[in-house]
Image (tube, rainbow, N blue to C red; front, side, top):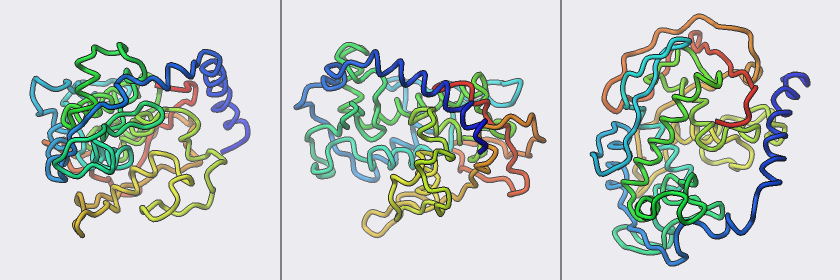
Length: 298
């Protein structure tokens, strides 16, 4: 990435972060939405898998957060289906909360303290939006995000779908924007963890010569989306059994991330099916519209 491109990316991001720093109040963050002794059920691997697959299919039912239909196409977008690649949601849930709704010390099938991060992220999907203060969401909603692993999974799928749909507006688009193509989720996954320069693959905080993440290296050396991609291809194991079938997806050329060369030919894409497997077009057709780098967040 050239210095000029780096500055184009960094300037709006720095302004946003500076504004946030002025407005941030530590007391709000430390409070969090739920009481310190809030409890959650710790699902088994099978239960968590069922919840994530149901959320990816948007089939958990009316009692759970609705997942919006995913838009397809660029520049003209059409809502088609709420189904997203299961492997992507499963990998996000691992990176975020290691498939745990309760604290790591709580055994599967037992109830104990809810899993909560220092930034007020709750449960397997580490939901932070609306969970930093009591009353930011209806109390019943906040309680279910913390206590109910299925509700938490559905809420995470809803957020990821919203990031996908917002990508067209912000110019964060890959390929012909087909939700059945795994590579096309790159920016949406980035945005799930904050669409800021912190997760830009060209951030100098990350080693430029880093190898592809495979689950064994230090996470501090990788942007968020590369962690998700790495675990998708190298799923963690429980009892010697992989949590999901490996899915290897290509990453975009770092040199093109943040550039605006204009539209490239769209790759042929498979049709979406129920809980689609994240598929990869041939390497020479992994073409995309790099995002404009004019926004600091989605």
